[in-house]
Amino acid sequence: MFDIGFSELLLIGVVALIVIGPERLPKVARTVGAWLGRLNRYVSDVKSDIDREMRLDELRKLQDEMKTSAQKYEIMANDTGQEVKREVDQVDKVIQAMAATDGGLSQREYDKDKAEAEAATQAAEMTSPESPALAANETVQADTPAVEPKPQDKPA
Image (cartoon, rainbow, N blue to C red; front, side, top):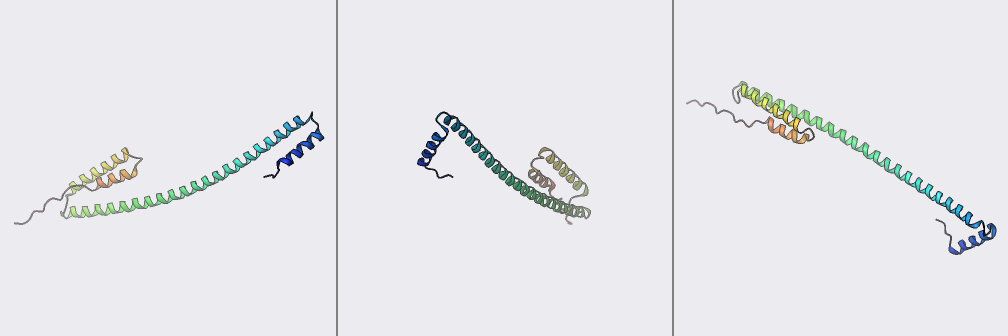
């Protein structure tokens, strides 16, 4: 910062000894040292405050980015959930149509399987609310019953 050599410091010390005198020189040196220490502490405090503010600004920006990405993922999850619900409704309609034409499960068996799937879904939601992906996986498995269709009576 300052380009002061040893010879310059020696010259300042000799001039100070002559001007101030040998009796008051130690007291003046202590006072100057205390002032320089205060100045040093003040400068370091200002530097740390500036650094802290810069880190705080970076954290705020990061927090805003995280909020926007979380909102995007929530929207995507809602859209996906709605699509899955529409697909499930379509499958329900197909199964009901098949049951009505007696081409698949009877209506009673369909209702029974649907009630079991809903119970499994509710049980999965109650046991693992912190892992929605696992609950969704269990729901998908519970919604697809592993019941084979009845064999059709073939005319003899």
